Image: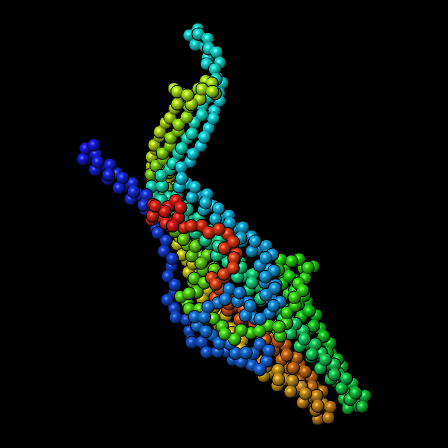
Length: 509
Protein backbone atom coordinates (compact mmCIF):
# COMPACT_ATOMS: atom_id res chain seq x y z
CA UNK A 1 0.00 0.00 0.00
CA UNK A 2 1.38 3.38 -0.99
CA UNK A 3 1.85 6.23 1.44
CA UNK A 4 -0.76 8.30 -0.45
CA UNK A 5 -3.34 5.49 -0.27
CA UNK A 6 -2.66 5.04 3.43
CA UNK A 7 -3.08 8.77 4.08
CA UNK A 8 -6.30 8.88 2.09
CA UNK A 9 -7.77 5.94 3.97
CA UNK A 10 -6.63 7.37 7.29
CA UNK A 11 -8.21 10.73 6.48
CA UNK A 12 -11.45 9.07 5.43
CA UNK A 13 -11.52 7.09 8.67
CA UNK A 14 -10.88 10.26 10.66
CA UNK A 15 -13.73 12.03 8.88
CA UNK A 16 -16.07 9.09 9.52
CA UNK A 17 -15.18 8.97 13.21
CA UNK A 18 -15.69 12.71 13.49
CA UNK A 19 -19.12 12.41 11.91
CA UNK A 20 -20.16 9.55 14.15
CA UNK A 21 -18.83 11.35 17.20
CA UNK A 22 -21.14 14.33 16.89
CA UNK A 23 -24.83 14.84 16.38
CA UNK A 24 -26.65 17.45 14.34
CA UNK A 25 -28.49 20.18 16.13
CA UNK A 26 -27.94 21.92 19.47
CA UNK A 27 -26.63 20.09 22.53
CA UNK A 28 -29.13 20.65 25.34
CA UNK A 29 -28.09 22.55 28.44
CA UNK A 30 -30.54 22.83 31.36
CA UNK A 31 -31.67 26.40 31.97
CA UNK A 32 -30.07 28.20 34.87
CA UNK A 33 -32.05 28.85 38.02
CA UNK A 34 -33.50 32.37 38.33
CA UNK A 35 -31.11 34.79 39.98
CA UNK A 36 -33.43 35.94 42.75
CA UNK A 37 -32.75 36.08 46.46
CA UNK A 38 -36.22 35.42 47.84
CA UNK A 39 -39.87 34.82 47.10
CA UNK A 40 -41.31 38.10 48.37
CA UNK A 41 -40.24 41.71 47.97
CA UNK A 42 -39.94 42.30 51.71
CA UNK A 43 -38.22 39.94 54.17
CA UNK A 44 -40.46 37.39 55.85
CA UNK A 45 -41.02 37.63 59.60
CA UNK A 46 -39.14 35.15 61.77
CA UNK A 47 -42.47 33.57 62.72
CA UNK A 48 -46.16 34.10 62.22
CA UNK A 49 -48.57 35.55 64.74
CA UNK A 50 -50.06 33.26 67.38
CA UNK A 51 -53.49 33.02 68.97
CA UNK A 52 -54.77 31.23 72.06
CA UNK A 53 -57.09 28.99 70.12
CA UNK A 54 -57.13 25.79 68.08
CA UNK A 55 -54.64 26.07 65.21
CA UNK A 56 -53.22 29.27 66.66
CA UNK A 57 -49.61 28.17 67.21
CA UNK A 58 -46.93 30.43 65.79
CA UNK A 59 -45.11 28.95 62.80
CA UNK A 60 -41.44 29.57 62.07
CA UNK A 61 -39.96 29.75 58.57
CA UNK A 62 -36.70 27.77 58.45
CA UNK A 63 -34.62 28.71 55.41
CA UNK A 64 -32.96 25.75 53.73
CA UNK A 65 -34.92 23.19 55.75
CA UNK A 66 -35.58 20.06 53.71
CA UNK A 67 -39.04 18.60 53.15
CA UNK A 68 -39.79 15.02 54.25
CA UNK A 69 -41.18 12.73 51.57
CA UNK A 70 -44.25 12.02 53.69
CA UNK A 71 -44.80 15.63 54.64
CA UNK A 72 -48.44 15.00 55.56
CA UNK A 73 -47.24 12.98 58.57
CA UNK A 74 -46.30 16.32 60.19
CA UNK A 75 -50.01 16.85 60.91
CA UNK A 76 -49.82 13.87 63.33
CA UNK A 77 -53.07 12.32 62.14
CA UNK A 78 -53.11 8.50 61.83
CA UNK A 79 -56.45 8.76 60.03
CA UNK A 80 -54.97 11.10 57.41
CA UNK A 81 -51.97 8.81 56.94
CA UNK A 82 -54.26 5.84 56.40
CA UNK A 83 -56.39 7.60 53.78
CA UNK A 84 -53.34 8.78 51.84
CA UNK A 85 -51.83 5.30 51.91
CA UNK A 86 -55.05 3.88 50.50
CA UNK A 87 -55.27 6.62 47.87
CA UNK A 88 -51.72 5.97 46.67
CA UNK A 89 -52.53 2.30 46.17
CA UNK A 90 -55.95 2.66 44.55
CA UNK A 91 -55.98 5.96 42.65
CA UNK A 92 -56.72 5.33 38.94
CA UNK A 93 -55.15 8.70 38.07
CA UNK A 94 -51.85 7.56 39.56
CA UNK A 95 -52.10 4.19 37.82
CA UNK A 96 -52.75 5.95 34.51
CA UNK A 97 -49.66 8.13 34.96
CA UNK A 98 -47.57 5.05 35.80
CA UNK A 99 -48.73 3.30 32.63
CA UNK A 100 -47.87 6.40 30.57
CA UNK A 101 -44.35 6.35 32.01
CA UNK A 102 -43.87 2.67 31.18
CA UNK A 103 -45.05 3.28 27.63
CA UNK A 104 -42.64 6.21 27.21
CA UNK A 105 -39.74 4.10 28.47
CA UNK A 106 -40.57 1.31 26.05
CA UNK A 107 -40.58 3.81 23.18
CA UNK A 108 -37.00 4.67 24.10
CA UNK A 109 -36.02 1.00 23.82
CA UNK A 110 -37.79 0.76 20.47
CA UNK A 111 -35.76 3.62 19.04
CA UNK A 112 -32.51 2.34 20.57
CA UNK A 113 -32.94 -0.77 18.43
CA UNK A 114 -31.92 1.33 15.41
CA UNK A 115 -28.38 1.45 16.79
CA UNK A 116 -27.97 -2.22 15.84
CA UNK A 117 -28.09 -3.98 12.46
CA UNK A 118 -31.38 -5.44 11.31
CA UNK A 119 -30.99 -9.19 10.69
CA UNK A 120 -33.66 -11.27 8.92
CA UNK A 121 -33.77 -14.91 7.83
CA UNK A 122 -35.93 -16.08 4.94
CA UNK A 123 -36.80 -19.34 3.21
CA UNK A 124 -38.56 -19.14 -0.17
CA UNK A 125 -39.55 -22.47 -1.81
CA UNK A 126 -40.90 -21.89 -5.38
CA UNK A 127 -42.16 -24.10 -8.21
CA UNK A 128 -41.77 -22.58 -11.64
CA UNK A 129 -42.31 -23.38 -15.35
CA UNK A 130 -40.51 -21.51 -18.10
CA UNK A 131 -42.44 -20.59 -21.28
CA UNK A 132 -41.93 -22.59 -24.51
CA UNK A 133 -39.42 -20.79 -26.68
CA UNK A 134 -37.89 -21.58 -30.13
CA UNK A 135 -39.82 -24.83 -30.35
CA UNK A 136 -38.26 -26.25 -27.21
CA UNK A 137 -40.46 -27.44 -24.36
CA UNK A 138 -39.84 -26.76 -20.71
CA UNK A 139 -40.95 -28.77 -17.72
CA UNK A 140 -41.76 -27.35 -14.26
CA UNK A 141 -38.92 -27.22 -11.75
CA UNK A 142 -38.45 -26.36 -8.05
CA UNK A 143 -36.17 -23.74 -6.51
CA UNK A 144 -35.49 -23.41 -2.79
CA UNK A 145 -33.76 -20.27 -1.57
CA UNK A 146 -32.61 -19.72 2.04
CA UNK A 147 -30.73 -16.63 3.03
CA UNK A 148 -29.86 -14.26 5.87
CA UNK A 149 -29.96 -10.54 5.17
CA UNK A 150 -28.35 -7.81 7.24
CA UNK A 151 -28.94 -4.08 6.89
CA UNK A 152 -27.53 -1.20 8.88
CA UNK A 153 -28.04 2.53 8.59
CA UNK A 154 -25.06 4.48 9.82
CA UNK A 155 -25.99 7.18 12.29
CA UNK A 156 -23.35 9.40 10.73
CA UNK A 157 -24.98 12.71 11.67
CA UNK A 158 -26.66 11.62 14.88
CA UNK A 159 -30.25 11.65 13.68
CA UNK A 160 -31.09 8.46 15.53
CA UNK A 161 -29.16 9.57 18.59
CA UNK A 162 -31.20 12.76 18.66
CA UNK A 163 -34.40 10.72 18.30
CA UNK A 164 -33.38 8.55 21.25
CA UNK A 165 -32.42 11.67 23.18
CA UNK A 166 -35.83 13.19 22.49
CA UNK A 167 -37.68 10.05 23.53
CA UNK A 168 -35.61 9.84 26.70
CA UNK A 169 -36.57 13.44 27.44
CA UNK A 170 -40.23 12.54 26.88
CA UNK A 171 -39.84 9.62 29.28
CA UNK A 172 -38.26 12.01 31.77
CA UNK A 173 -41.22 14.33 31.30
CA UNK A 174 -43.64 11.48 32.00
CA UNK A 175 -41.62 10.63 35.11
CA UNK A 176 -42.13 14.11 36.51
CA UNK A 177 -45.75 14.23 35.37
CA UNK A 178 -46.17 11.10 37.48
CA UNK A 179 -44.50 12.83 40.42
CA UNK A 180 -46.82 15.79 39.85
CA UNK A 181 -49.82 13.44 39.90
CA UNK A 182 -48.48 11.91 43.14
CA UNK A 183 -48.08 15.35 44.71
CA UNK A 184 -51.49 16.52 43.50
CA UNK A 185 -53.18 13.41 44.86
CA UNK A 186 -51.61 13.65 48.32
CA UNK A 187 -52.20 17.41 48.49
CA UNK A 188 -55.83 16.99 47.46
CA UNK A 189 -56.38 14.38 50.16
CA UNK A 190 -54.90 16.68 52.81
CA UNK A 191 -56.91 19.64 51.52
CA UNK A 192 -60.12 17.58 51.49
CA UNK A 193 -59.49 16.34 55.03
CA UNK A 194 -58.86 19.91 56.25
CA UNK A 195 -61.95 21.13 54.43
CA UNK A 196 -64.01 18.40 56.06
CA UNK A 197 -62.60 19.32 59.47
CA UNK A 198 -63.38 22.99 58.83
CA UNK A 199 -66.96 22.21 57.85
CA UNK A 200 -67.42 20.12 60.97
CA UNK A 201 -66.11 23.07 63.02
CA UNK A 202 -68.58 25.41 61.31
CA UNK A 203 -71.44 22.98 61.91
CA UNK A 204 -70.47 22.65 65.57
CA UNK A 205 -70.27 26.45 65.87
CA UNK A 206 -73.68 26.84 64.25
CA UNK A 207 -75.17 24.26 66.60
CA UNK A 208 -73.65 26.14 69.53
CA UNK A 209 -75.26 29.34 68.25
CA UNK A 210 -78.60 27.53 67.93
CA UNK A 211 -78.30 26.39 71.52
CA UNK A 212 -77.63 29.96 72.71
CA UNK A 213 -80.47 31.35 70.58
CA UNK A 214 -82.84 28.70 71.93
CA UNK A 215 -81.99 29.68 75.50
CA UNK A 216 -82.56 33.35 74.68
CA UNK A 217 -85.89 32.53 73.10
CA UNK A 218 -86.98 30.80 76.30
CA UNK A 219 -85.86 33.88 78.25
CA UNK A 220 -87.93 36.21 76.07
CA UNK A 221 -90.93 33.91 76.25
CA UNK A 222 -90.80 34.01 80.04
CA UNK A 223 -90.49 37.81 80.00
CA UNK A 224 -93.38 38.05 77.55
CA UNK A 225 -95.49 35.97 79.93
CA UNK A 226 -94.62 38.48 82.66
CA UNK A 227 -95.44 41.39 80.36
CA UNK A 228 -91.85 42.71 80.27
CA UNK A 229 -91.40 42.44 76.49
CA UNK A 230 -93.70 42.64 73.51
CA UNK A 231 -94.78 39.67 71.43
CA UNK A 232 -92.93 41.18 68.48
CA UNK A 233 -89.69 40.72 70.36
CA UNK A 234 -90.43 37.02 70.82
CA UNK A 235 -91.31 36.60 67.15
CA UNK A 236 -88.12 38.38 66.12
CA UNK A 237 -86.10 35.96 68.22
CA UNK A 238 -87.94 33.02 66.68
CA UNK A 239 -87.11 34.36 63.22
CA UNK A 240 -83.43 34.67 64.15
CA UNK A 241 -83.44 31.09 65.43
CA UNK A 242 -85.12 29.84 62.25
CA UNK A 243 -82.62 31.76 60.10
CA UNK A 244 -79.70 30.11 61.89
CA UNK A 245 -81.36 26.71 61.49
CA UNK A 246 -81.67 27.40 57.76
CA UNK A 247 -77.91 27.96 57.52
CA UNK A 248 -77.22 24.46 58.83
CA UNK A 249 -78.39 22.30 55.84
CA UNK A 250 -76.02 24.02 53.33
CA UNK A 251 -73.12 23.26 55.63
CA UNK A 252 -74.27 19.67 56.01
CA UNK A 253 -74.60 19.39 52.23
CA UNK A 254 -71.06 20.68 51.75
CA UNK A 255 -69.81 18.20 54.34
CA UNK A 256 -71.54 15.30 52.58
CA UNK A 257 -70.07 16.35 49.23
CA UNK A 258 -66.64 16.71 50.79
CA UNK A 259 -66.94 13.18 52.16
CA UNK A 260 -67.77 11.98 48.64
CA UNK A 261 -64.72 13.78 47.26
CA UNK A 262 -62.42 12.30 49.87
CA UNK A 263 -63.85 8.83 49.22
CA UNK A 264 -63.28 9.23 45.47
CA UNK A 265 -59.69 10.38 46.04
CA UNK A 266 -59.12 7.14 47.94
CA UNK A 267 -60.22 5.21 44.84
CA UNK A 268 -63.62 4.20 46.22
CA UNK A 269 -67.19 4.68 45.07
CA UNK A 270 -69.39 7.09 47.08
CA UNK A 271 -71.37 4.19 48.55
CA UNK A 272 -68.10 2.85 50.00
CA UNK A 273 -67.56 5.86 52.25
CA UNK A 274 -64.37 6.04 54.26
CA UNK A 275 -64.41 5.07 57.91
CA UNK A 276 -62.04 7.89 58.85
CA UNK A 277 -63.55 11.22 59.86
CA UNK A 278 -61.68 14.47 60.41
CA UNK A 279 -62.03 17.42 62.75
CA UNK A 280 -59.58 20.21 63.50
CA UNK A 281 -58.79 18.92 66.97
CA UNK A 282 -57.38 15.70 65.46
CA UNK A 283 -54.79 17.64 63.44
CA UNK A 284 -51.56 19.19 64.68
CA UNK A 285 -50.26 22.38 63.11
CA UNK A 286 -46.55 22.01 62.16
CA UNK A 287 -44.64 24.77 63.94
CA UNK A 288 -41.51 24.68 61.75
CA UNK A 289 -42.03 25.28 58.05
CA UNK A 290 -39.39 24.66 55.35
CA UNK A 291 -38.36 27.50 53.08
CA UNK A 292 -36.33 26.10 50.20
CA UNK A 293 -33.73 28.29 48.55
CA UNK A 294 -35.02 29.87 45.33
CA UNK A 295 -32.20 28.21 43.40
CA UNK A 296 -33.43 24.81 44.60
CA UNK A 297 -37.10 25.29 43.71
CA UNK A 298 -36.63 24.60 40.00
CA UNK A 299 -35.10 21.22 40.90
CA UNK A 300 -37.85 20.35 43.38
CA UNK A 301 -41.03 21.22 41.51
CA UNK A 302 -42.23 18.30 39.35
CA UNK A 303 -44.02 20.63 36.93
CA UNK A 304 -40.83 22.65 36.37
CA UNK A 305 -38.80 19.47 35.82
CA UNK A 306 -41.44 18.23 33.37
CA UNK A 307 -41.27 21.54 31.48
CA UNK A 308 -37.47 21.24 31.38
CA UNK A 309 -37.76 17.74 29.92
CA UNK A 310 -40.22 19.05 27.34
CA UNK A 311 -37.67 21.73 26.42
CA UNK A 312 -35.01 19.02 26.10
CA UNK A 313 -37.23 16.98 23.76
CA UNK A 314 -37.85 20.07 21.61
CA UNK A 315 -34.09 20.67 21.42
CA UNK A 316 -33.50 17.09 20.26
CA UNK A 317 -36.23 17.46 17.62
CA UNK A 318 -34.23 20.28 16.04
CA UNK A 319 -31.30 17.87 15.73
CA UNK A 320 -33.51 15.23 14.10
CA UNK A 321 -34.84 17.73 11.58
CA UNK A 322 -31.29 18.91 10.81
CA UNK A 323 -30.00 15.35 10.35
CA UNK A 324 -32.84 14.57 7.93
CA UNK A 325 -31.36 17.18 5.57
CA UNK A 326 -27.97 15.41 5.50
CA UNK A 327 -26.84 12.25 3.67
CA UNK A 328 -28.16 8.87 4.82
CA UNK A 329 -25.68 5.99 4.55
CA UNK A 330 -27.03 2.44 4.44
CA UNK A 331 -25.12 -0.84 4.29
CA UNK A 332 -26.82 -4.15 3.51
CA UNK A 333 -25.67 -7.71 2.86
CA UNK A 334 -27.19 -11.11 2.36
CA UNK A 335 -25.81 -14.60 2.26
CA UNK A 336 -27.62 -17.81 1.54
CA UNK A 337 -28.10 -20.78 -0.72
CA UNK A 338 -30.40 -21.76 -3.61
CA UNK A 339 -31.02 -25.30 -4.87
CA UNK A 340 -33.62 -27.26 -6.79
CA UNK A 341 -33.92 -29.76 -3.96
CA UNK A 342 -34.38 -28.84 -0.32
CA UNK A 343 -31.81 -31.41 0.70
CA UNK A 344 -29.17 -29.83 -1.52
CA UNK A 345 -29.30 -26.46 0.22
CA UNK A 346 -25.95 -25.37 1.63
CA UNK A 347 -24.06 -27.87 -0.47
CA UNK A 348 -21.12 -26.90 -2.62
CA UNK A 349 -21.99 -24.61 -5.49
CA UNK A 350 -25.32 -23.41 -4.15
CA UNK A 351 -24.10 -20.42 -2.15
CA UNK A 352 -24.97 -16.83 -2.95
CA UNK A 353 -24.14 -13.48 -1.40
CA UNK A 354 -24.36 -9.77 -2.04
CA UNK A 355 -23.01 -6.57 -0.51
CA UNK A 356 -24.71 -3.22 -1.15
CA UNK A 357 -23.79 0.25 0.02
CA UNK A 358 -26.06 3.20 -0.44
CA UNK A 359 -25.88 6.94 0.13
CA UNK A 360 -28.93 9.13 -0.19
CA UNK A 361 -28.71 12.91 -0.15
CA UNK A 362 -31.98 14.83 -0.26
CA UNK A 363 -31.77 17.33 -3.11
CA UNK A 364 -35.25 18.70 -3.52
CA UNK A 365 -38.42 18.13 -1.49
CA UNK A 366 -40.31 21.31 -2.20
CA UNK A 367 -38.71 22.98 0.81
CA UNK A 368 -40.38 20.50 3.19
CA UNK A 369 -37.20 19.55 5.06
CA UNK A 370 -36.19 23.17 5.56
CA UNK A 371 -39.61 24.14 6.84
CA UNK A 372 -39.69 21.11 9.15
CA UNK A 373 -36.43 22.32 10.64
CA UNK A 374 -37.80 25.83 11.05
CA UNK A 375 -40.96 24.44 12.63
CA UNK A 376 -38.92 22.43 15.14
CA UNK A 377 -36.93 25.57 15.97
CA UNK A 378 -40.17 27.47 16.56
CA UNK A 379 -41.40 24.67 18.83
CA UNK A 380 -38.13 24.92 20.73
CA UNK A 381 -38.79 28.64 21.27
CA UNK A 382 -42.31 27.78 22.40
CA UNK A 383 -41.03 25.18 24.88
CA UNK A 384 -38.52 27.70 26.25
CA UNK A 385 -41.28 30.25 26.82
CA UNK A 386 -43.50 27.62 28.46
CA UNK A 387 -40.64 26.64 30.74
CA UNK A 388 -40.14 30.25 31.83
CA UNK A 389 -43.88 30.60 32.45
CA UNK A 390 -43.88 27.44 34.57
CA UNK A 391 -40.97 28.72 36.65
CA UNK A 392 -42.66 32.07 37.24
CA UNK A 393 -45.87 30.31 38.28
CA UNK A 394 -43.89 28.09 40.68
CA UNK A 395 -42.37 31.11 42.40
CA UNK A 396 -45.79 32.76 42.51
CA UNK A 397 -47.27 29.67 44.20
CA UNK A 398 -44.62 29.76 46.91
CA UNK A 399 -45.01 33.51 47.41
CA UNK A 400 -48.80 33.19 47.64
CA UNK A 401 -48.48 30.39 50.19
CA UNK A 402 -46.04 32.38 52.32
CA UNK A 403 -48.28 35.43 52.30
CA UNK A 404 -51.32 33.29 53.14
CA UNK A 405 -49.48 31.78 56.10
CA UNK A 406 -48.49 35.21 57.35
CA UNK A 407 -51.78 37.04 56.91
CA UNK A 408 -54.08 34.15 57.81
CA UNK A 409 -52.21 33.86 61.11
CA UNK A 410 -52.95 37.55 61.71
CA UNK A 411 -56.57 36.94 60.70
CA UNK A 412 -56.92 34.03 63.13
CA UNK A 413 -55.62 36.13 66.00
CA UNK A 414 -58.07 38.89 65.10
CA UNK A 415 -60.96 36.43 64.74
CA UNK A 416 -60.12 34.89 68.09
CA UNK A 417 -60.29 38.32 69.73
CA UNK A 418 -63.52 39.09 67.86
CA UNK A 419 -65.13 35.82 68.93
CA UNK A 420 -64.24 36.36 72.57
CA UNK A 421 -65.52 39.94 72.45
CA UNK A 422 -68.74 38.84 70.71
CA UNK A 423 -69.34 36.11 73.28
CA UNK A 424 -68.77 38.58 76.12
CA UNK A 425 -71.06 41.14 74.48
CA UNK A 426 -73.77 38.53 74.03
CA UNK A 427 -73.59 37.53 77.68
CA UNK A 428 -73.84 41.17 78.81
CA UNK A 429 -76.79 41.76 76.47
CA UNK A 430 -78.54 38.66 77.77
CA UNK A 431 -78.19 39.78 81.38
CA UNK A 432 -79.24 43.34 80.49
CA UNK A 433 -82.40 42.16 78.78
CA UNK A 434 -83.11 39.82 81.67
CA UNK A 435 -82.84 42.76 84.08
CA UNK A 436 -84.81 45.04 81.78
CA UNK A 437 -81.84 47.37 81.26
CA UNK A 438 -81.63 46.81 77.47
CA UNK A 439 -84.04 46.21 74.63
CA UNK A 440 -84.38 42.85 72.86
CA UNK A 441 -83.09 44.54 69.70
CA UNK A 442 -79.73 44.95 71.43
CA UNK A 443 -79.75 41.24 72.21
CA UNK A 444 -80.60 40.38 68.59
CA UNK A 445 -77.68 42.44 67.27
CA UNK A 446 -75.33 40.78 69.76
CA UNK A 447 -76.53 37.34 68.61
CA UNK A 448 -75.90 38.13 64.95
CA UNK A 449 -72.42 39.41 65.74
CA UNK A 450 -71.63 36.32 67.79
CA UNK A 451 -72.94 33.96 65.12
CA UNK A 452 -70.77 35.51 62.43
CA UNK A 453 -67.76 35.59 64.77
CA UNK A 454 -67.86 31.87 65.60
CA UNK A 455 -68.23 30.92 61.91
CA UNK A 456 -65.36 33.20 60.95
CA UNK A 457 -63.21 31.71 63.69
CA UNK A 458 -63.82 28.17 62.46
CA UNK A 459 -62.94 29.19 58.90
CA UNK A 460 -59.78 30.95 60.06
CA UNK A 461 -58.69 27.89 62.02
CA UNK A 462 -59.11 25.64 58.98
CA UNK A 463 -57.24 28.14 56.81
CA UNK A 464 -54.06 27.73 58.90
CA UNK A 465 -53.95 23.99 58.16
CA UNK A 466 -54.84 24.47 54.49
CA UNK A 467 -52.12 27.12 54.07
CA UNK A 468 -49.52 24.80 55.57
CA UNK A 469 -50.43 22.00 53.15
CA UNK A 470 -50.34 24.47 50.25
CA UNK A 471 -46.77 25.50 51.13
CA UNK A 472 -45.55 21.89 51.11
CA UNK A 473 -47.21 21.41 47.74
CA UNK A 474 -45.77 24.66 46.33
CA UNK A 475 -42.25 23.62 47.36
CA UNK A 476 -42.48 20.28 45.55
CA UNK A 477 -43.59 17.87 48.24
CA UNK A 478 -40.23 16.25 49.10
CA UNK A 479 -40.35 13.48 46.46
CA UNK A 480 -36.53 13.56 46.25
CA UNK A 481 -36.33 12.25 49.84
CA UNK A 482 -38.46 9.19 49.18
CA UNK A 483 -36.49 6.10 50.15
CA UNK A 484 -39.15 3.49 49.48
CA UNK A 485 -40.30 2.52 45.99
CA UNK A 486 -42.16 5.54 44.74
CA UNK A 487 -44.43 5.98 41.74
CA UNK A 488 -41.65 6.62 39.25
CA UNK A 489 -39.07 4.20 40.68
CA UNK A 490 -41.55 1.40 40.11
CA UNK A 491 -40.85 1.78 36.39
CA UNK A 492 -37.44 0.91 35.02
CA UNK A 493 -34.94 3.66 34.50
CA UNK A 494 -33.68 4.41 30.97
CA UNK A 495 -29.96 5.07 30.59
CA UNK A 496 -29.27 8.34 28.82
CA UNK A 497 -27.42 8.42 25.53
CA UNK A 498 -24.65 10.97 25.14
CA UNK A 499 -24.94 12.24 21.55
CA UNK A 500 -21.33 13.41 21.67
CA UNK A 501 -19.87 10.04 22.67
CA UNK A 502 -19.87 7.38 19.91
CA UNK A 503 -18.60 4.75 22.34
CA UNK A 504 -21.71 5.00 24.49
CA UNK A 505 -24.40 5.86 21.96
CA UNK A 506 -25.69 2.25 21.92
CA UNK A 507 -25.88 1.38 25.55
CA UNK A 508 -25.91 4.74 27.28
CA UNK A 509 -23.41 6.02 29.82
